[in-house]
Image 1 (cartoon, rainbow, N blue to C red):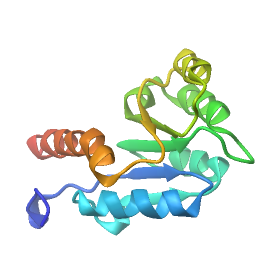
Image 2 (image 1 turned 30 degrees about the horizontal axis):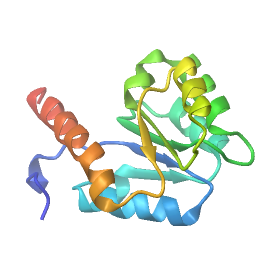
Image 3 (image 1 turned 90 degrees about the vertical axis):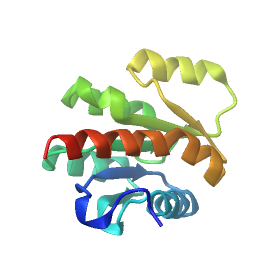
Image 4 (image 1 turned 45 degrees about the horizontal axis):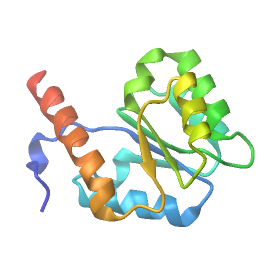
Length: 144
């Protein structure tokens, strides 16, 4: 059971970028458990593909990205994403198991402000994301 009635839900777009299939599948499953539909979740192994999708789409509500990936790492992704629009700063979550807090400071300098420590549990992930989903849904429903 989700906390929104199905016929009143406004579609969202959530992007998940991680080179780990396990992390992508886990984040997708959690998002579905938190009330999103499968067609609202867009998952990418490659940050380049995700960036192209974001450029080509009209609206994205939440973006999760790993810090370290092979082709384009999270640092370069954040730089390129925020060059498209600074509005993504409030929609961006960096997922990382990084222990070196200097790397988090680097991300903050680039403009990232929200972090989810890996590995994460459903409860910890939900504690961060459920209120965000609820707020987005409430704002979007109030605009109808």
